[in-house]
Amino acid sequence: MDCTKEKNLARCNCTYEPCARKGSCCECLSYHVGMRQLPACVFPAEAEKTYDRSYEHFARLVAEKRV
Image: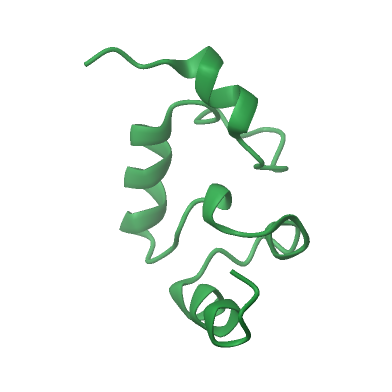
C-alpha cells in the first residue's frame, strides 16, 4: 500500500509543528499507540491544542459528548 501523504496532510489537524510524522498516518498511529495515546486527528480542534493525546482524555471527551 502506498502512503498518500499529500492527501493525508489536507485532513491532518495536528498543530505540533516539528512533527516529522504529519501525513504519514501509519507512522503517526504507531508512534502514539506505543505511548498509550491517540493521534491528533481523533480530537476536536480545541482539545488537540492541549497536546493531551491520552486515552483518558479521549474517554472524557466522549463522556462529555464532545467527540
